[in-house]
Length: 163
Image (cartoon, rainbow, N blue to C red; front, side, top):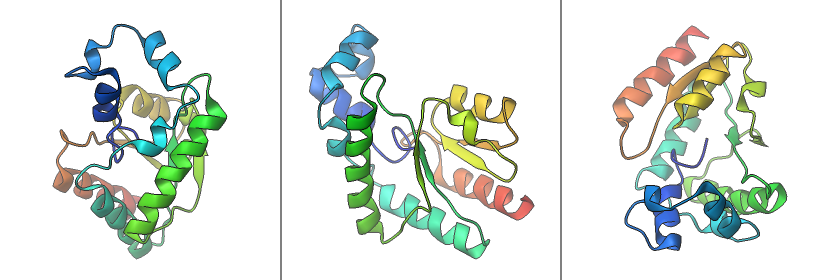
């Protein structure tokens, strides 16, 4: 996943709506209407550890003869535009990190990619639960700014060693 994991979605959302915390925004509909057709997703700031995060995932995957991909949710009702701007963001960040994901997938139904020997890294427990319950994959919750990087590294290494 990107938003909340490596892309600081919520700080930009708060800024765009001029609120202290994104939860102060009155309705989901208000958010969707404001972001549709915009360049929002290409403007999201990186977290302080975003480059390190991608470099770490890339090197751990390579050491374990594995690959990694991006699986991100597009904005509801604005698929093409939000994917375009997420790709702009990813191109820029991957170039800075000197890494490249094997694939980029964009879907509201992440569980459809849940196969044996796959792990979803996501900040939303619902996405992880669906991924595990509706498929054969595993999940690691990582919410940047709240989750601890050493714990994430340990869980990812454990998954890679047991796959």
